[in-house]
Length: 219
Image (tube, rainbow, N blue to C red; front, side, top):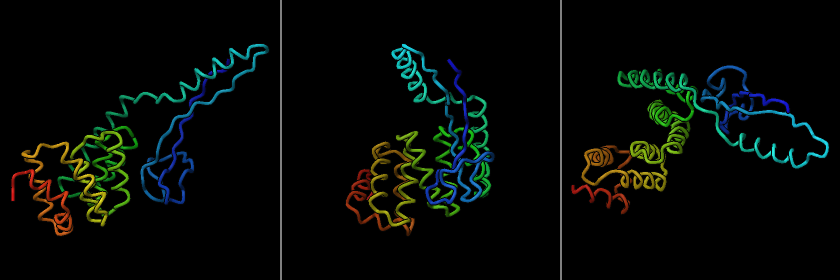
């Protein structure tokens, strides 16, 4: 029986990009939209038809289908590379170098697409540099990987509120609140942010948000 052949492809998956779905031979980011390319591994094989062995062919097919649905293991070297890129990006961001930080976080998401931390940091850097669509996509990817990250829920709520998506913002604020205790300092600071940011004050009139504020014990 022929051996499986591993094929690695890089593609842009930003639907509004003119290179959406097109394979790219080299590079970490799309040359058009500058978003990170998605790296996928596929397996190709030819199954020889064995005369009178239909049952054997079916059994082999089932085994191969199971292999197709198994994600390749995350390479330790790439995980480390992503972690170093995230650390460097955080240092750059702390110095106000958000564009350079964003590039490092992009690099981290390409090296390790399963790193929720890399995607969450990319979302924050993209938001600061006014790349709203990129920020939203990165936050949503981070939450798909780590749905109980309270900080990502809060940051996405802020982004959506500033873009006028009240329902989306309140939804993520409620999720944030469900993951933090009413008396926790991070919850209090978040409520203070809501009060202090002019772009977010519109949420204060929503009864659901008023309930969250009341739960902190502050007037």
